[in-house]
Length: 295
Image (cartoon, rainbow, N blue to C red; front, side):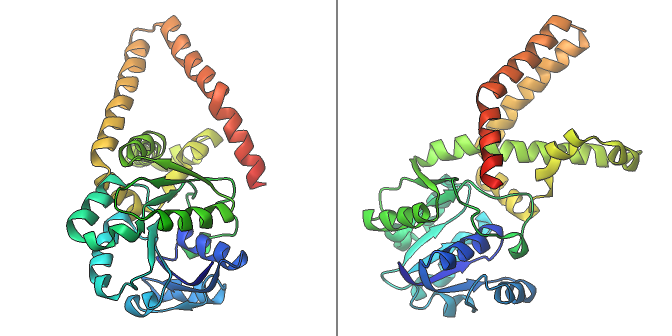
């Protein structure tokens, strides 16, 4: 499918994509760009990529360039590469914020918009770095391609076919719908998990609290082990949608707090029962199906 694919950022997503491209024979040559020498050594030693090169050398003659870096790094990278990007290369990304990225591209690097397919694989985990990458990460996972008026249909078709071949389910969304959706379903849960861990870690008896925490606490806060830089960038680049989600969640906290303060047993029971019914009706079935896939 590709003679040469360059992946900038060989972490969990970039590394997993590289592994899958090689396994499925979709790229004759996969080149990685790494920030650290230690990452580069692991990427080569574990055959994640065929080669690790400096940025400019890495994109030379590339058919596909994948940005798998923190959100705020993407546009500066493209600015530095503008004159080196091959004319027929397709660019795509794996970032989880789209409106801000598109606006910055339009303002600062408009020349790439006709070849940039904004994409977001809904996959990952709490572990980060190339060591966390694995084969099959995207199997049966959604990949969202967000609509932009400039990008060519050919480029979109190529990127969609790549993800489909890797076993992903490709969907199309508008920029705004994408960012609002994932602010609620992904960005907000991560912020809550980080906040809960920080709340306990700032208590005077923090070690005792952590020692006595039950399995539910570990399940709920697992994602607080995610990469801090990546999540900082998500909060900054999707600021308005994250703030809106936080405001909505705060309303829910205020509501249950008021019921607990009043010892309103009926209201508390109804509140918890409503949430249980909502989860059991949809999320529970999805969670069980995802476990089967991962097994």
